[in-house]
Length: 357
Image 1 (cartoon, helix red, strand yellow):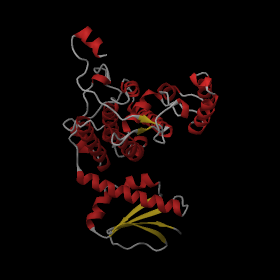
Image 2 (cartoon, rainbow, N blue to C red; image 1 turned 90 degrees about the horizontal axis):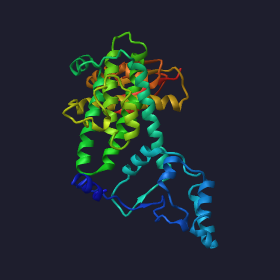
Image 3 (tube, rainbow, N blue to C red; image 1 turned 60 degrees about the vertical axis):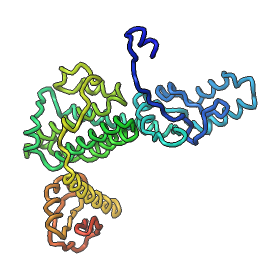
Image 4 (cartoon, rainbow, N blue to C red; image 1 turned 180 degrees about the vertical axis):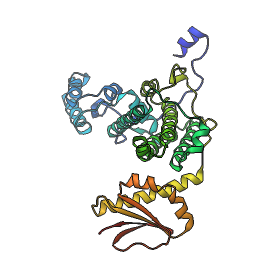
């Protein structure tokens, strides 16, 4: 590549090289045909059955040594009892970049590769969900209008987006790809899919309050910027999804789109993130009680012993109800838990309760 670049352009194609650790098997052993633990990247990308892997070994140079062949076949059956599932190019690339560069080797686990294939599917489904609500007549609200009319949960996800962009830029600068991939995955999986998409479904499907346009605009901003954050690791998936977003005809490819920065998304708000973390803890506490007592359509109570906690959670009351799927959620500021309830402590100033009878 270096010689071809110099020959055709007279310049080096790159000036810096990132060296990763030696790729080993999941047990930390060097990959060797005689151990039957070799992982071919093409097999990870396209998938391969155990029978096909065994046939390949039988036709390799090990066929001349019956003892080594038997040991290799046995090792292969132990390491890949079900073969290797199809994970795709983007899933493999992202998985490799998640490994910590500290240590003596990169222990490649097929199960972890499959996990990131599922992550690709989650992104695909999240963006597809967005497509169904953008529509052909979608118009993105200005950032000023979004901030003026947004709810706390809208500003929270934008703060998370800004924070993620900051971590990614810093990680790339320091060549710490583990930090970058971890931040991107946390934003897509834990913040956007698990929380924000769930909380905005009522406003998207039944927009009586008029907040649907704000939710759609914020969702578009998160998806569009989230794909740009992910593009260096998953160019094929992000390009396919990015080209289908409305209003981006002026951008020929996501590969040449500007990488997100905190200057583009100056929404970081540490206080708001802490407040939302409290709300998520409350929702998690209620869900745990519902699961523990196997309840359905419960009446839930959030008992606050300070006015500060009460005022914070008041702005999230609808979100708590949505995330817990409770029949009702009532916030109490008197610090007294109703009788006949199961109780869970969230903090010194907040407890949650669900009615048992």
